[in-house]
Image 1 (cartoon, rainbow, N blue to C red):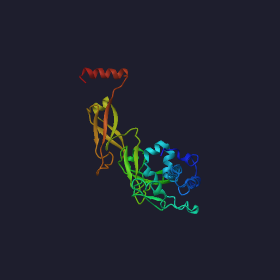
Image 2 (tube, rainbow, N blue to C red; image 1 turned 90 degrees about the horizontal axis):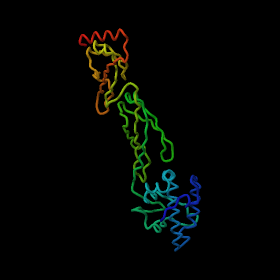
Image 3 (tube, rainbow, N blue to C red; image 1 turned 90 degrees about the vertical axis):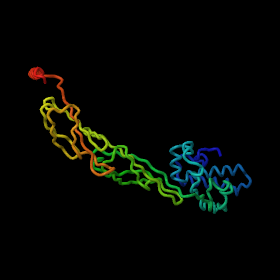
Length: 299
């Protein structure tokens, strides 16, 4: 059948309440019910259209998807099997003298794609619920030590909250799977999963490279030539290191075991201090004189 806006089919405006949807469906379904219109193909097609609209708008999850993506987007995601999966009119028509035991099998030709219809309900094989995806952001230091984050999301029309443990050493962009925390399964099928992507904020001083950490520091030319001591920030606190005399620019000094915890195994990565040599842009008179004398001596 040609698709029409489901709200228009039921004579409603978008945003109609569940009671309004049920009332409008019942009124139109009684009007076009095949038992009331025997042999009327036009009424039968209208009845099919009304039931398809109600199958979507009476289901909170399907209705949410329809409202979000519109008619075209919805039908790109849901087949007719999906639309009628779990559809149940129950005893809506009993007081009108209409039965539901075989009406759907008669007008829909036995159901869709192997569905069986009994008591006004289409049955189906167990189906896993929808998987959800979310993102959360943590700090550089939270990624180092691990943390717990509370996340909130909508599930089957209700707001839910979860406390999620973020493991120490997690990398930016890692995805955690929370088993069974997605959408509800149907017909005895399992719930879907929730996939949480973890974004890690940068640090103004420390740079991560895998499980290692890189710190860049500069020393004066005289310190590079004569040696010096430097205080280095680490995630374990400040560490003092010795700069050997004659160190060359871009040399890396390794501090073993001061990197990130390894998620794939035991232990930690390393911290590397990359040494740069600071060359003064301007010299005082005495400094220039000393350097000129050093230059004459081959330095």
